[in-house]
Length: 131
Image 1: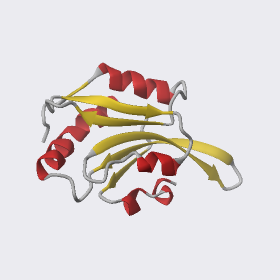
Image 2 (image 1 turned 120 degrees about the vertical axis):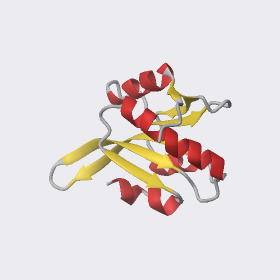
Image 3 (image 1 turned 90 degrees about the horizontal axis):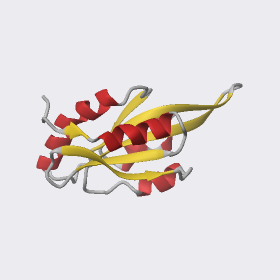
């Protein structure tokens, strides 16, 4: 089911900047106050996964694109783009429903995502779950 929520052009521009220009390490997306459009809430070029996790609110939903860097055995460093749907158990039911029904609109507009992770608590989005 689709919510009819749109994706702002700013989301697509930020994603291209992360994917092609390596300008950001991650992008946090949110819904605008009217719940009609997906917008960029924050971008960062911070390299630490733990710092990124500290940006996720404990009781609110978000979507994240993260440029995940990891060591491949015998092959050096690799990157893959992760799409994270953050929907904590303590988030309000209405917000969880709108986020769940709007996820596909955002995901469809971001081509090149390698892995999708859905997290309801911090243990599900730990560094090890991305590798």
